[in-house]
Length: 356
Image (tube, rainbow, N blue to C red; front, side, top):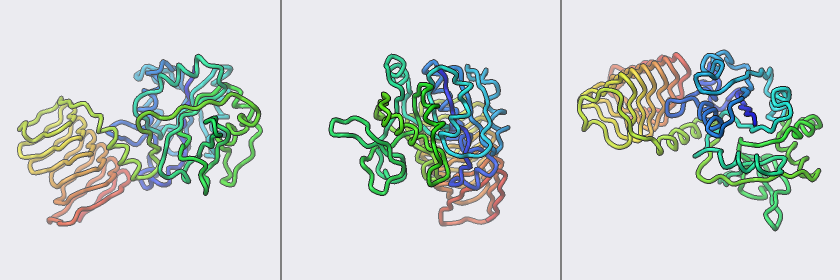
């Protein structure tokens, strides 16, 4: 079986961060979202993987993943010039897939646990497609499954005003190559895109064997800043405490905290888990890093308080403020010359500089 990771799209809801980064390469708990996907495929024994690239700095994706050797997989890159729907992106990998079954995994989706059982179930079945569904509170924002009275999947409806169920189609699909025949017959939807849900619906109508499984645990589509922070929190909830740095006062660290190599937590600093500190980062005295915070590599936090936020690599925070519910792009600098009582929320692009 082969793996296909969709790594394109504009990521408009995550701007300005996505002006200079593909959204799938943005870090959650100090690791790119799509790396969780790649590791999930590898864990299932799927080692031959295609990344479908968009036109937002695809070279950054190639720089990070290379040939895939350092991740224990083989990576092929396929360029999607314009994002015209998931089905159109899948059509580009027909030559790569050849006659093999494959798993399609959206690179901005996170799943608690792994896909091993799904992989085994599909591999050992006569199914033509296997979908992973998840119960959601806002079904009008997703492709939604419709079932008959016996629980059989009979239809998929894209972002329905009157949802037939609360079960959304996640970004994880298993297909046999017959899916390409149905993609070839698609016409653009009202969004001007080729919808993978339409292709699957045509398979259902044609009598093909389309099965589904429901998510055990959580699933997160990281399309918005709030989704991004929620996903960061979910990953940190399962964090295993680890310390490879220097903590000058052990009482400074409480809860589940991971500290990377060569990082220093100065005396009188406070780190409250779950939280993660990258490598070569310095947390100065009187700084408070609160729960659900991720601080990247090569950062220097001189002043202030950080809570429920993601501070990416190579940032400098030198401000007497509380930073909360924020996404701070790499190489950014926030400074202030005075104390600010109210908390601040930021969404900053790469190399931003703010003086308060």
